[in-house]
Length: 209
Image (cartoon, rainbow, N blue to C red; front, side):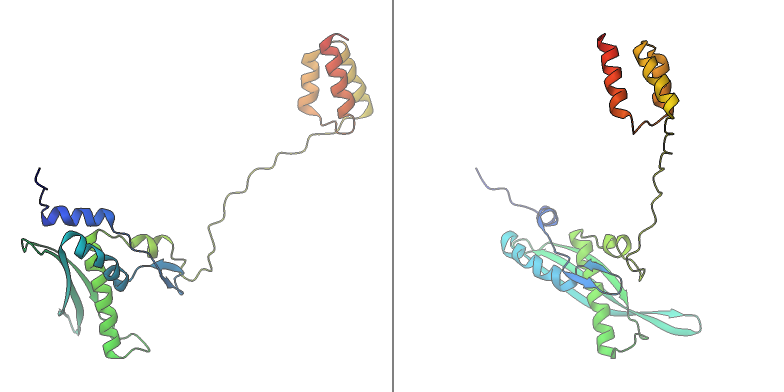
């Protein structure tokens, strides 16, 4: 029986299901883990040989004109997977603005940072990798890890303690078999000091001794 030849779409679907990319990068400011473009590129390499495909990522710079302000410049990345046998290709894109106001960074670093983000988004779109949970779901935004306060559980009020007279009435009710009255006592009082004696008396009354 001939082996089925997979289409590029079928190969990509299998890779999407099989690929695992560890979130090994840590954002100290936001306190969350994430995956970088480099992590994804490293993870896809074994699939090139396994499915006889080639991955590729290309960048282009674009600008958006704004009213009375400097144009916005962004990196557009195109991630592609090509079948080495048929030459057919599947593509996905990702974009990231270049932050020209980023402090402590030279222009090449600003461009490189935007390129890295755009690559990650393009590869994530191609491989169906979702990073939104990392930044939105676990980012503590400098709040020191504080969680929303939980509603305290209600604490039941302590039961009243029996007086010596009430203890006697309680024991007599047990001995007389007036268990309805006994239940009222139990629901109203907490007889810690005479608990053992009361339980013993109740047991004897129920057994008929």
